[in-house]
Amino acid sequence: MSVLLWIIVTSIVGGAMSVLAAAMFALTLGVAWVSQLVSFAIGALLGAAFLEVLPHAVIASADASSTSAIVLAGILAFFVLEKLVLWRHCHTEACEGHEQHVHAAPGPHGGHESFDGGRSGLLILIGDTFHNFVDGVLIAAAFMESIELGIITALAIIAHEIPQEVGDFVILLHSGYSRAKALAYNLISSLATLVGGLLSYYALSSAQSAVPVFLALGAASMIYVAVADLIPGLHKRTALKATLQQVLLIGAGVGTIWFSHHLVDRFAG
Image 1 (cartoon, rainbow, N blue to C red):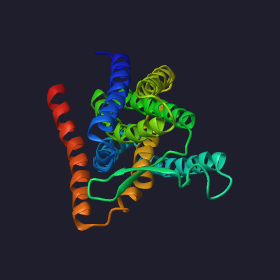
Image 2 (cartoon, helix red, strand yellow):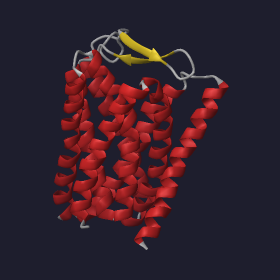
Image 3 (cartoon, rainbow, N blue to C red):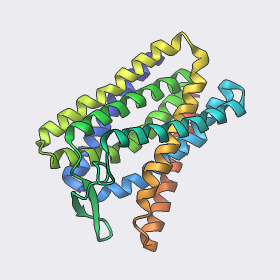
Image 4 (cartoon, rainbow, N blue to C red):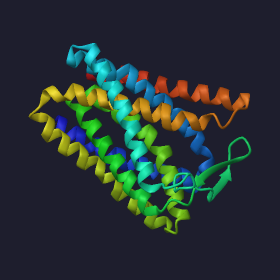
């Protein structure tokens, strides 16, 4: 397949797969499984960032120092962007991002996993659409570097999208959306991945020198999401059994990326 076709297929299939898998977990297995998925997603994101995306970015730019600087700048930029989003919707500490109106579901080891039902469904959909668009940009940049890197990046994105989509799906249900509407709106939102991928493909085709920059920013995004957004949630479960489970699942996520790399290499060879 051509690079463009790879981008189209992975953007559509990956987005739909994430949404459908999230709906399955939320409606059949329950939100208690989200914490398990989050640990695995952390490993997949870190594995893809450090084992795949960053090495390709360094090789493509032939300058490790500039690539590292772009990654650092990207992490700081994502921090500022997240702050701006919070400030936009928050005027006090008791804002939408910190409301105490939560809907709880039984956790896998007792206790409850909490989901913020105070956030409006519309804001969830807008934020998810923007996030999916950025994912499409990262997928396109990766595929334009190599088919192997594109596949690995798409797998990592799908891995972290599923637990996020589960949370979004549950919040939409608690915001008054029916199951059918929540699923339909999430599927429509996932199409933003395709839009981001196509726009990036045509933009980067005429500016190949920008590909290493996008790869470095993609690595920064993966690292930031894993370290700043996902890992802090794991610290809420401090039991030894839960901690060991988290470590094993993070290792499984890293191992999946490593295994996928060698599997793709074998088929490509």
